[in-house]
Image 1 (tube, helix red, strand yellow):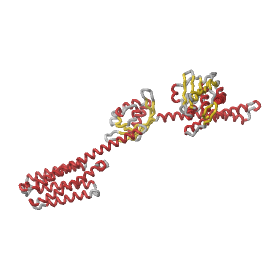
Image 2 (cartoon, rainbow, N blue to C red):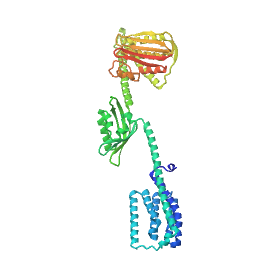
Image 3 (cartoon, rainbow, N blue to C red):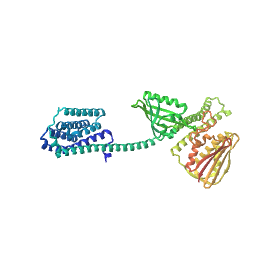
Image 4 (cartoon, rainbow, N blue to C red):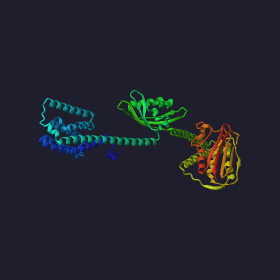
Length: 543
């Protein structure tokens, strides 16, 4: 197949075509030379026959040495052979020479294998030579000693004329066909390449694009992958003429920064890179990160090749991390400060042991140490859950004593918030679960409820079994969960109040740990809430 013969570059195609012209001309020249030699019967021997022989040998030498000879030598040699063959025959035979067919082949070969300016120059010189030759013949400066009547009636004359016209026309047609096939194969390859590039760009997380800044200052997007619809809510066609629809979704606070950064990149031809926001009509704000490499076009414009990705999740994670660091710093600083102050007072000797002042300070140390231990354990448990290294150790135990134990262990914590724990309902039967982890779930839910319970209002607990499911609820009568936190309340590091001056302690991992432990048991967790009424957290685990 033609498609397999080429690497689809223009240089390789042209190199193959000139070899085809040499081979075709060499094959055509052998019968032509034979017929020409028959003219000895009519014209006797002429130097033209020797010239023909030399030219045929030269053509075959160029073709045989095609791998060793450069493209320039083969192209120049072929044109020189055609030039000599044309005018040598004209000088010998005059206007009746059938070598005039080489004029067309010479012009075709020049255009195909030479630079355009050089080709037109050679064609012009060739035509000028023909004009001078005709003028010389009219002025009788050239004399053709030829009996045209006898020459015209000889069969060899018509045979060689027909042969040359037919064969060289066939060569031109063949070369044209080869060129069309090459272009078709190149077109198919380009289409396949475009399809592959489209698939590749579609798999890249972001928009692969080109931005062209015209010399007049206007800009448009010559190419953008389909992901532009997801990132900017516009189609590639909508930005193929101008970038007005893209500018319309840029955040007003970032618009000038984006424009000035692009202008700076165009002025210095340095890579463009920027993080900026987009804001859509529904109020949604997303963070994007863009980077591109500029280049100057032949028309004097600037063309950037680049990628834009959505980094909103990264920005949110970064914000959560910053809030988490601030929260942990706050949670660590407070008990450590208390511990440090109490120890300094004890060591100073100013406290009166008889009046229990040292005991009071040691009690503060104990309380804050427990708080630190709880914080560290929560962080370690969360890390194990994230890595999947926290396994379950299921055992059989009775539900009611277990729930009472959980309530007793957290009652003193509830008293710190002027609330108390009430068991509203509980089945007394045996269940199979990880006792330690299930206690961790209930304790986290209880402590969370206590933090948001108004003073004097109880935290209510139920633990019932039905249809093969254990259903646990923990209810507070607090302000409820704001709507903006409904979808992410079980995510890590999420807190309703994440400021450093908040009244509610914690690092925002408790509910995330609850959710993961419950799911490890094959269960689900959810909440029901109402403003100024309260919140109920539900845990359902299959037995």
